[in-house]
Image (cartoon, rainbow over all chains, first blue to last red; front, side):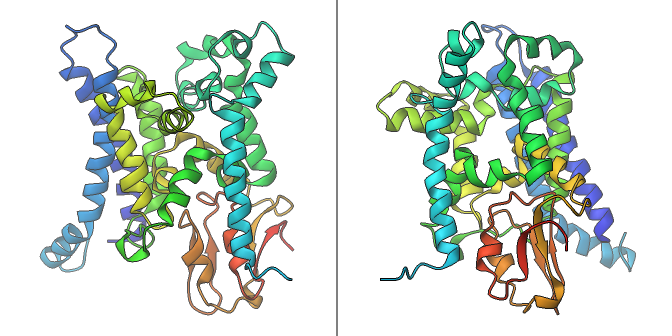
Length: 74
Length: 288
């Protein structure tokens, strides 16, 4: 994978992961507790971080698989 | 008897000393900087509130930059301008020295990680595109409040550092955080991205919005040759890659034949590389 492509994927993945986990926090919170929302909201960026780091760390494996199937990379 | 400590060791000792100065300046029960501000400006938030690291919350104001509806909050406490104005301007003028020299939340995991042998640590350098990830998270954190509530203090490593300082100084109340999601932050900040991360500053490199903003200010202005930054002299370089090895934020790429690049969007100005360089190829100053 070209460096520029992987950089863009990393940037978008990181921003997207935080965004997706923020949406999940919004959707999942039932709102029936005291209503501060901090419990879910505080997990959101952490979940995003874990998801993205996991994705990036496994990225080379996916990249290699793609190169094999496409015969030259993305 | 002359000192046998190397320049790198002396630099790290100086930074460790300033770690305690940072604790005394910003963290309760001391918080001397905020107490002084409150004494000079009576009637301000610093004079009339519980004085601890939250008195000049550095993280939330960075998020407010993308939230116009929060701008009125800036009028409630002048110290909110520290992270969005004072530190970025200081970084433009001198590079992000606050991060490398004074921020206890960054220094604590770094120095704690020196207790762990390197073979047990994960090195992000060369494996993970650190800069895109860092600014991707930064962008995400700026945008997250548009779809949910603002990300709360449990997420913040400054808060976790305050919990530690409070506990060490005899206040056991912060131990309650163990029963909250804050413990996730503590483990990620101190263990995963600290103790077991090469350099010990994984949180600074990836997740700290204050560090990202100040480094962005420093990096964008690093092309101005008169501004002091960590600079590299290719002709003097011995290509030993010592700088790359000692950098706590993994900001240096050391290639063949003196091809060393200092990542200005990551560098926190700690000067470890400058002091460790055996040939004097790295220095802090303006471009020659």
